[in-house]
Image (cartoon, rainbow, N blue to C red; front, side, top):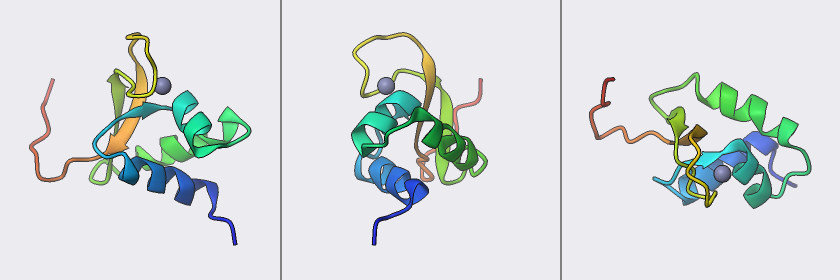
Length: 83
Ligand SMILES: [Zn+2]
């Protein structure tokens, strides 16, 4: 049985920890047909900051350095850098 989209996204982020990726790259690397499948997942994961960290920054999958929203597995052992 195929894994659900959230399961695939979570597995991808964990396999690539601690790299951060934008929705576009997650879509391509996980192999999803539509970016609309990714956005609700990353948005939901961002609601669990102890497990996933979503913020503007460099994407590990894009060559450009344009700041965009990226998500990665939260580094629980490290203190959160405030502002
Ligand atoms: Zn990217």
